[in-house]
Image (cartoon, rainbow over all chains, first blue to last red; front, side, top):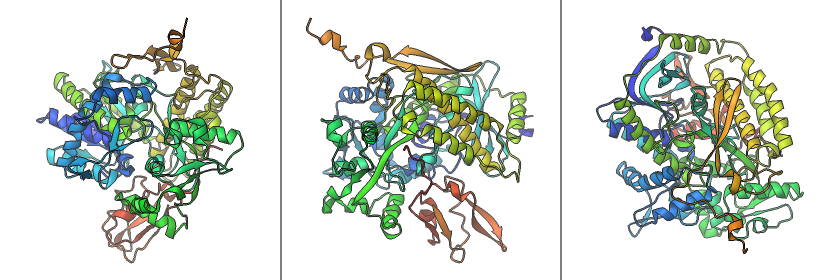
Length: 561
Length: 72
């Protein structure tokens, strides 16, 4: 009967989202369940359109010659202990195998004397990164071809609106719509992996691409975490430039309005090579002290090093750099204005070390999974690769172990009715006003970068109006409906971000409280967990397990008696 | 942002439609043939995908992004 309600697809493992996490989750599920059906669903085109596709695909890889324990310590310490230590270890442990698999798929990683060319990355002391020729587009395309060769089904241009659940609360698949026609789609699955990216507030360029999977999980009862942390980074007002990490390694420096290279004052050890959140914090301080605008001075990059920036092997960058000079008459090797940018939240689904969420049948991978609160420059893709592989294996095990999934006809009809009412052809409305209101509330640095209880509470009050407007909104077409659902997810994310930011009364990494400026390891080596309650989010804390890297020694114990 | 599609050069292959991550390009019938039509162009994310994958180079994307939300 379900097939009378809409298009019905049956699968053993369903993976939602085709970035690095989802691509690897689908491959892993198929390898671990070779006779089973594995389906990879994406809102757009697999291999061409996700956040990963537009990255350089720099990735952390730990080779057999590296000290794994030292790399785990590096990531955990770099995260100031907000990290799932065992999962980080398992992610790093599988990274070299994955690198060799990518090579087998035809992806080329540059070598010198037979060894991979690797570089250090900001904020990490010993862990190294490398990238493939062709960057994220080539990386995603090779993985797509591998999935097709191994028999994974691809389901494209489907936007997921809800998770299907049986009477016991187990997730048994998804409901969604065709992103162009609006046709209702149901996927019945033994296990479901959400790999749907972080939530952004559309900060521009590919940062406009956002994920809704964390809130699908939240609505289904899964616990989330890391809402108070964000990915802060220097950004440009007018265009996009991916690669400041290596521009800085080649000599570029941030300077203030007085021409002073200011980072040495804030980070004596790292200076401009500090992690992006330290750069962002320093930029805010410069603003508060009246020394803006701020610039990245690329003129310090030696002439002989500039070719790599002008002729990127990453297709979009090559087009972009060429046109920046030809069309916009911007000299990228001059002084370019920069500001601190809140790129995305680190809110993710809390899982165990096998990437299983607190809801049976539901797993998470990629940036939808909360393995840590800072991913540096190369651990975004690195963590996505590893959690994808781990989640795919667990999902294959669950699909084999659990009973056949049941999707209720009642839930399917109810979701279809709600979704169908979400847009009315010809109604001239757009989510953009709602989005602008949300951005105006969240992007100011006083709210999302440099926080204070008074301002957070004020923002929460103002958010209520935006949420109320969002709840009343309708779309004029399927495109608008998808955008509106994404914006409503951002509004809910903003609420979780503000609530969790109020609760964490200390400053740690990207979470900077003006009223609690110091890190407090005694009280705050904790996760802030969030579940959906009857009257709104329910927040609580749990200690962070430290089985591999012991917590930092409290200064009191080090003091001379 | 995508600013121009030269329909005289376009071969109606449709490659530009699915590679758009923002659902900005829709292949639609016009004058008896399928052509790429810009819809919701304000949602273009300036990723250059349409220009990169167009086999006859009939699409032009400008590198400057406008209406970027700022922190101050």
